[in-house]
Every structure is written in structure tokens, then in C-alpha cells.
Length: 294
Image 1 (spheres, rainbow, N blue to C red):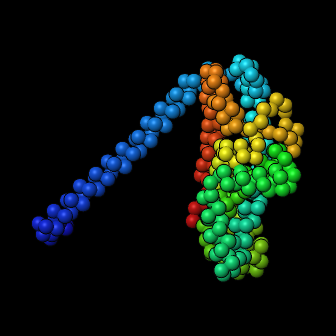
Image 2 (image 1 turned 90 degrees about the vertical axis):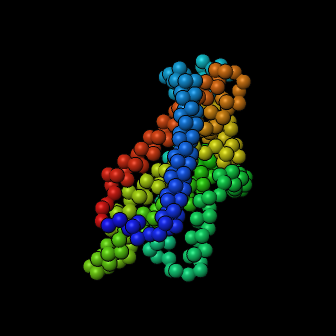
Image 3 (image 1 turned 45 degrees about the vertical axis):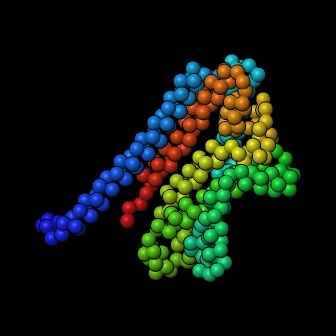
């Protein structure tokens, strides 16, 4: 039945005006999306045109050099991989344990709410603040110097709120009936979490952790603050060595006046984008393949 037949002429006019405004807003939103896509494609095309000729094996096997044709990303790639692995090792167990406590064990009181509010706020703090914290706490306070371990600890602080929030959401998504069924069979709270809640929540936890690692790999400001802006021409041997990472090496090349280094920076951007896309794709695949349907 056509409901507009029961409306007066004035109501019909207002309805048409609302529909017209809705169409205007739809076109405005579409234009905003198209402008963003066009700008992104323009930047990507420019980067690929400059960087593709420099994507050669020497880019991955050579250390940085004063000569563009001899320069490469070997030390930066090693630093990025080391940083990602150490950050994941530190942030994953701490973040998941904090999420389990807040969701399964913490009482609903002012102290718990205070912690939750601060975790949510920390997730939105600018990354440079974490760099300053890492500089004062790890580089000078714990005398770790400008080492890889200091950088990994700083990035752990940066991504930890994101890991906690995403892990809590994944744990919260597990139906309460799963917990009640386990309790009904005599399981303890820890057995319920270990054997039932965590296996079902693990896809979401892993997805959030991988996305947090993607942010850690792409960050530059905190690492510049703690002193990762270093010229490295040796292989990393341990977490106490000086280090550099892909974003820092790209920043170094862009700051040089020679055109060849600008093109090398474009090649480094392509490599960094490939690493980030690989991590994001892994997160999507994990979410799809391991997700439980209720």
C-alpha cells in the first residue's frame, strides 16, 4: 500500500525535500570518497614510477651507502623484522592477559572503570608522546641506550592499548552460554577461559595484534625520538645493538638532495607498503578462516 496517499500536500513537500537533501548528502559523500581515492592513486602512481626501476636484488642485500647505486635496505629490513618480532613477543602476552583480567576477573568498580578509561585514552595518544616516554624511561632511565630493545619497549607501549582493546572485544564476543556451560560441567574460571573462551576469541585477538604490529612497523616519530636515526652498516646481532628501520631509512633518503636517493626512497616505500599489505592480508585471512559462527 502506498503510504504517501495519506499525506497532505505540505507533508509530501517536506518528504520530497528530505529525500532531496539525502541525495545531496549522498553525492557529497561520494565526491569525498572519490577525491580521497584519486589523491591516493596519484601518490601511488608517482611512487611506483620512481621506485620500480630501483627494485633490484641489491636493494635487499646492500647496506646504506653514500652512492645510490650501492645503497640498500639490508640493515633497515633487519631492524624492522627484529623490532616487529620483539614487540609482538612483549605486547601479545601482556595485552591478552590484561584483556582477560578486565573481562573475566575484574569487578565492576571505580578502579576497573578508571583503568578502562585510561586504556581507551592511551590508544589515541600521539605516537611522539610514546617516543618521549621511551627516551626518558628506557634510553636514559634503564640505561638501555639507543638500542633495539629500547625501541621495541617503546613500540610495545604504543601498541599495547590497541592490543588490549581488540582482545577485550574478541573475548566479549564469545557468548555467555559457553561460559555457563563450562561452569555447569564443573570447570573453574581459568579452565573456562583457557579451554573455551580463548580458543573462540583467538581469531579476533590475532587480527587485532597483527594490525597493531602493522602500526608499529609504519611508525617513525617515536623511533626518531629515541635515536633510531642512525647510519647502520652491519648486521644486527642482538637486542642491544644500534638499529634502524624502514621508515627511518626512507626518511634519510628523502632528506638527501640527489634525485637517485629520492627514487631509492620511493623503492623503500614500495617495500614498506608490501610488508604492511602482507600483514593486513594475513589478518583478514585469519579472521575469515578462524572466525566462529554463532
